[in-house]
Image (cartoon, rainbow, N blue to C red):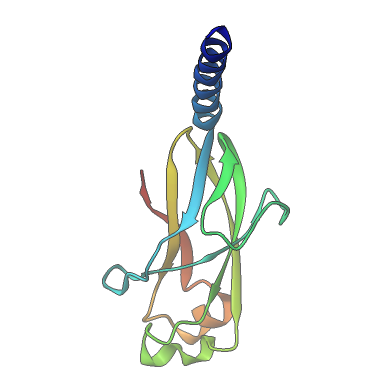
Length: 135
């Protein structure tokens, strides 16, 4: 009986520490689906603080709280607009600094100007990474 009580107490302690540990982190993920009505499209999360280490093919990436530099990539999407076909052979990269709060998930995407000029398409200024929602 004593052993059972000890195991139960240990389990409660582990549970308490795991929730505290989890609260010290946040998550970043791409928007699940493209949102053409808002001109927001999925992005790839390429690097966090200059490192690819620890990034996986999963959609959720755990980050510690505080500021981090995130590098995104955007690949052509044929749904954008007829004039955007010049982007079809390109992958565009941008970095931005983000502040993360504990216990939150940041859903990021690319805000795309689907009416962009040819110059904006060439220099990549037709899109910006955005935080679409936080929960």
